[in-house]
Length: 95
Image (cartoon, rainbow, N blue to C red; front, side, top):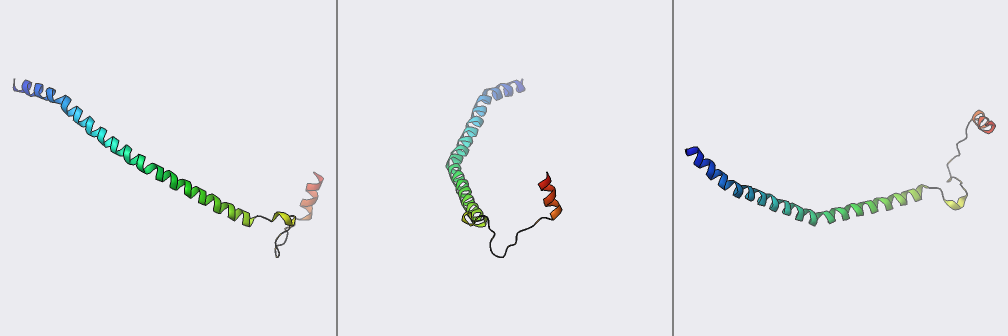
């Protein structure tokens, strides 16, 4: 009979403890969401800034390394043209 009283008492308190746990989990979720909402724009902005800087620097490097357009495809001074062997040139012309 003693166990029945304990069971009824436990069943009476069960909704209170379930509600308490759900409330605490809800508060923790809200705190996590609030911190994410506060930090996420900064992370997105930093990633965007890094991408812009990387794109601009890569564009400048590619522009510097490319051949100038007004020289007609001439190579810079001191750089020789690479010539293919004669048999390869003739084979390509025949095809």
